[in-house]
Amino acid sequence: MNRQVSHIGVAALVLLAALIVGTTYWQTWANAGLADRQDNEIRLVAQFSIKRGKIYASDGRTLLATNVKKKVGGQTLYFRRYPTGPLFADVVGYSTQSRNRTGLERSYNDFLTGSNANLDTVFRSTLDKLRGATVTGNDLVLTIRPGLQALSRRLLQGKCGAVVALEPSTGRVLAMATNPTYNPNLIERHFAQATRTTEPCGAPLLNRATAGKYQPGSTFKMVTASAALDTGRFTPSSPFYDPGYCVEYRKQVRNAGNPEAPETFGSVDLSTGFEHSINSVFCNVGKTLGAATVLRYAERYGFYSLPPLETPENERVASGLYDHGVLFSPKHPDTQVDPGRLAFGQERLQVTPLQMAMIAATIANHGVTMRPHLIERILSPGGKTVTHSKPEQLG
Image (cartoon, rainbow, N blue to C red):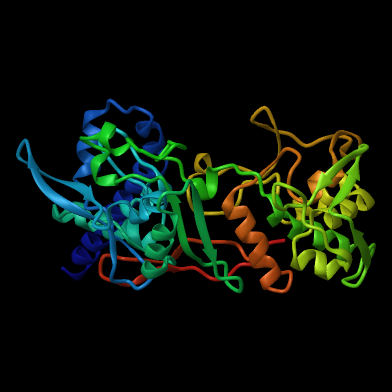
């Protein structure tokens, strides 16, 4: 009798293992092929019968994404709701039936639906299916602080742009807000209303923090100053004379100033030039270093690479020189690029706010770049930590 019980137990374990392997296959590998078929109604029903995991802000209490349960055709389905509306939309994104997903809802879909390859998650999901229970996904806890996010949104009102705040020593993203933005609760049924904006820059669905391209201007002087000091060509006390302009290609490149005349500082050193953001000083630094050197240091800060973040790749763009909207890396920078204007952030430079925040954080962290991240930890439905983010040094 004991041998029979033992044999039955072994058979049950083998059966359970087979179910886990099968579930892993369909959820992890075969699901990619199914996902390409947007008209697959069976897939849609299966997808919305899963109770997606919740998404929280850094305090673990502020709820950013949850579910609403509805009966459809006799089946219980779960649809997304976003309690904070537009406040975290650019980061969290949306998950809908008709317009698919964006943001973390897309890139962390496997965790949120309990279909990631983590053995504990697969085992739990399989048991839920065997019992006929609702499959529940993992919860995400973000690094973003609700108060700082709200402040960022208020400061952006009436402006087109983005705010990115990083913790230099860890890379935690403490705030990431853009304007204009949208209400993810309206995407499914009121898309036209959700994407309508009175802001002149338009494109409310664009995450300007990671995919918006801007001329960096004087913020790029951080890169030029790094190159100037690290190469040993200049020191903080290197002298300059500022007449209010720099001569570049026989033309005056002027400092900022009033409409009548540029601001003039006279005899200064590099430190003073950086403190007062004097264009002529950095123009001369750029001419001495050459465009190739300045661009090489920009690449060391992350230019010409997608900024590392957990959001989908197509929602991030690289910073660098752009020609007619296309990123290009010149083969002969010293003859193809104006070093003076490059040095104070003009020329054809286009950058994302995230990239410039990473540069500032690197300098604040004594030259060490930390990988920026939005996910603090991932929790099982029971509150157990599945994964916990650790600070990671880049380069």
